[in-house]
Image 1 (cartoon, rainbow over the protein chains, first blue to last red):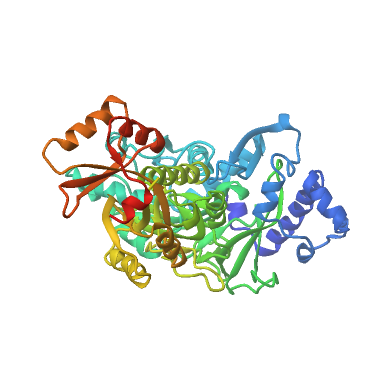
Image 2 (image 1 turned 180 degrees about the vertical axis):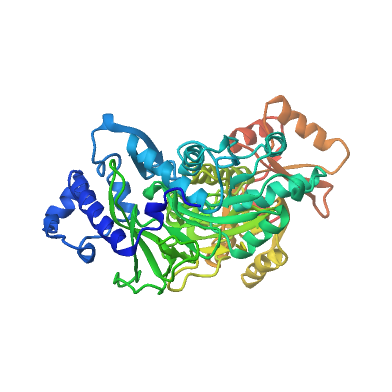
Length: 431
Length: 142
């Protein structure tokens, strides 16, 4: 069953023609933004010379840093009064990346998510419980609007409050949930603790997202809950969730090529790679009035699955995301760059240059240990001082990365010395 | 003012050994030792006969070590003498942050070593009450 068969099963030739038309519109829209206007002028790019999709390669990439630098509205293409929503990416409380939407953008996004949900067999008769955070984060509202558009009864339960979640499931016969894998593993335990067999619940499907996880974890969730779990891919830069989704065949995620022009590049040489080869996913958003983004480097590693899918959708699938090409971590659903932690630590005189970030998962919750060596010359000699130092580091880090790290003070020289590229992050989590 | 050496140490086996290896090499003699423990780490405190040299040697070996001013007062080695000394401190609102003590061989005396916020003031208070407050050399050579 399709939400929009004409688009979802469109023939490749028509799709490519459509992509090209939308690309031209997006480029014209981008030219109106101060950021892209400067880029096009500085690089002597004449968008009228773009006469085929191949010419996309002549355009420069856009990075997360570019988005941050053009904060707040360097990449906005419409007047402020046309904007009806903004979302910010999860992570720092400093300058996060902000995305803007017009009324049409919000509506189109809802349509896209409805498409995704229907591809998994969800219909307006389903009861959808949205166990994702509502707020600046795109995950919550993204699926909410899509499910509403599809016609489901939406229960906006947001995250946490496990007992309430269970009560809602039972009272309203929830059939579909949107949840992070780590919360899914945690919640099923709470259910079991209360003497309820999860297989007896009405839930048939789960949409997983917002953090990386392995097929092993997905399988575990399916078995423990007795449901079908579907992989969901998205990022706020490309609206939020809804960029790509598994269909009922669950063999890769269909990426909606009428909204996004996708490329796979070699992350080091930046050269385009042929379909089927693994590389970094680059996306051009050709369906957002407020904020077109050209050749966005997602830093996610994947490959295009060129073979047609038995579901009949002609939008190609991408394989599950293998990892990232940069060092960004996702801890407890929050994006963290080790360099951010380093910046904080370097400002504190009592600690030295040597530190390590150790990540563990205990009871399905991410824990972050920051091990930091004392700087011997700044040691004041009393416990009180050490305790307040520990507290200061914790507080400064928490203010920056919004999660609560455990700070461990170490003797100078305890950490292995950094020869060449320091091993700063040890990720013990099995995902 | 006499000084004690505070050394930061993780709460793991072998720390006292590592520190005392350094001391032995430099022929430094310990007069008293105590540890303030705080779970994952602690501070090892040493009273030695050559504190400056000791602290430098430890820092050279990579330890986080520092010198701290302390008050050292001689009291009688009899029941009640610490009660009397600590009453003087309490009456003058002196707060003891950390302390240890040891008895002296030969004489019937003991030494009470402690950390306070204002060392000079505390020394004066005790001296006024007739206490024998030890100077650097007197303490190190005890």
